[in-house]
Image (cartoon, rainbow, N blue to C red):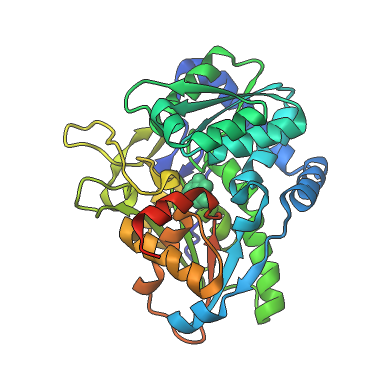
Length: 396
Ligand SMILES: *Cc1c(COP(=O)(O)O)cnc(C)c1O
């Protein structure tokens, strides 16, 4: 029998994607992390602390909500996994809580992170306040101006924000600046990456820390449907962490169809897109071999999406492999489709989703469900941060 695994191998490869493509100066840090993370994550002490914080601080388990009006509209049993109800408003906190506990166990006192829209920066600054750690956040200069409120929040939480002026002054350069910082402070510094990207072991570590989502889905479906698996799992992908968490326990369960939505932007052929699976070609970005948006000259292309959290030129290696092996269906959802979907969820269910989550909601009209199908769609975050964009783009 053919056994396929969609998990990372010992070297962090998912098929042809992944690995740890890093400068010599980082090899010691990354190797230390690689040797440590599984032992810590699987220890009882870590699990107890992690689960306690997820329960009492983050507010887990997040509800699995049967959306009746949306179910009727799309002809299936549609459940929403409510990551929008977590403390700080998205799934990102699951990962930062886990990584800061690991940093603590490794004796690190100084935390660095990158952020694009500021959501991961806020989630990191939050856990640094909680654990009394020094926190430095790298953020593109352009993004600090676009996401002013999140910058103020991070400052209030006690973090130092370093605006990055190189290149386009956005997420790609912020990641590079964070990696450079890590190279120059390998002894006392822990780099908390915000998505299932970067060199091994980050994609696997982030996926494991987000796997609490699929673990809960399993239990909640058993209670609500009398079976512990759905017919479809749906999630949006920027770097891929909420999708990795949603899929984790079902990766090798072929009864479950996996569906991802990436940001089409103004259209995958418009040149203004973040659809790295549809339009990307293999290369190395931020320490990992994956699918990357390239210009005709072979440079990393500046991505575009209305949603800052999906505006990344690459994709996690797990997801590149899921797409390549046809294990997952990948749909590109454009700005206008995501906006319409956000309004639809708000009006049908009274839930204002994050613009990122609106992309997977925008995939629903492209699906073809049977009435008996059980569908679980992860609402990765809440839309408070996006209200201005929503009001600007649609008539109320
Ligand atoms: C950051 C973010 C995303 C995209 O990140 P993934 O790692 O792909 O999950 C999606 N939704 C929300 C609400 C976010 O803040």
